[in-house]
Length: 163
Image (cartoon, rainbow, N blue to C red; front, side, top):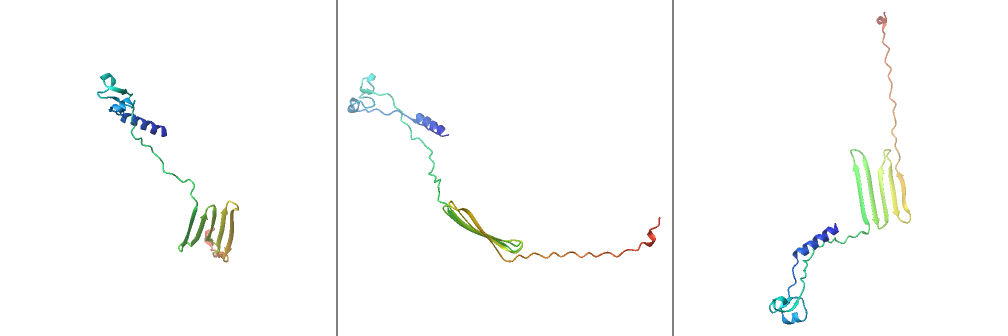
């Protein structure tokens, strides 16, 4: 892609280019500066001076440059969020802080048995990922009540057993 851009710029510069104008003064021509001869034109036309080969003038080329990109940005952030839904009973939260390669955070959630699980964690290049899990509250398990089976009274079928 870059070579196409360079080739296009060179073609535009060639198409827009022109000749460098000649020096028309007697001094410039006698010093051998570029020109078509002075005082009457080229040497073949009777003037005196130097006839130079035509030179091309390139138009300013448009070169696409990218803005400097910082591929290493120092990682630093902090966030937290929480959910507390009374309809479904969903309650949880999380918070995290990062400064360079060190990450610290915690999250908590309410479990189905009524306890709250809290996890505090840290991560860095030296120690790796470490988490400490704790539970608070008392687990409440629902009591399962066995359904009562009510037996149906027997039906007397005295007259229906005839063959």
